[in-house]
Amino acid sequence: MHDGDFEIDILDQQGNIVGSKLRRDVVKGKDIYHAVYCVLITPDDRLAVSRIANRPDLPNLHAGSLGCTAATIRRTGETGDQAMQRALAGELGLKSQPELLSEEVIAVDNTYRKIGLYKVVAKVPETYSQQDIDEIVSYSKEEFAQLLDSEPEKVTPLLKRFFINFCN
Image 1: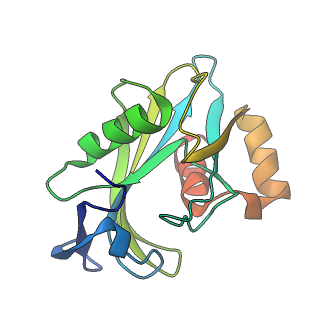
Image 2: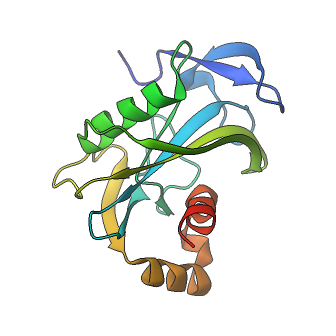
Image 3: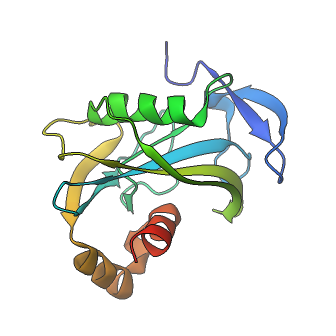
C-alpha cells in the first residue's frame, strides 16, 4: 500500500468524526485528525527522541525538529493503541506495548488535533526508519530541560507537552 492510499477520520473540534479523507489529501495545519505520539524511555531513564525527517511525499510540519520518537495518524477503523503499535513496529522495529498517558483534543499548529500521548520503555533500536527519522538522540531529563530552556524552537509542541506533563 502506498503511504497515502488509506483513509483517516476527519474530526470536529470536539473530536467527533465528521468525515474521512485519504491520507495523501490531508492538509496538516488545517484538517483535524487523530494522531498518536510515543516517547521511548530507555531502561536507564533517558529520553530517546527523533529528529523528524523531511518527507516530500507526506510533508511533516516540523521536519528537522526534535519530536516524539514515533508518531502516526490513526487510520479509519483503527484504535489509538493499534496505530501506536503500528508506528513503533514500522518506525522503530519494536513490538512493545506502549502505555497511554493521555488522550485529548488540543489546539496545536494553528488548528486542533486529537492526540494520544504514549510512552514505551525499551532500548534505543540500532536501526529505524530513515524515511521518518533522521536520527535518534538520547537525553537525560536534566539535559532535555536545559535544551528546552536554551533552544525551545528545536522541539516540537507535542514533545514539549510530553516532557512538561509526564517527566517533571
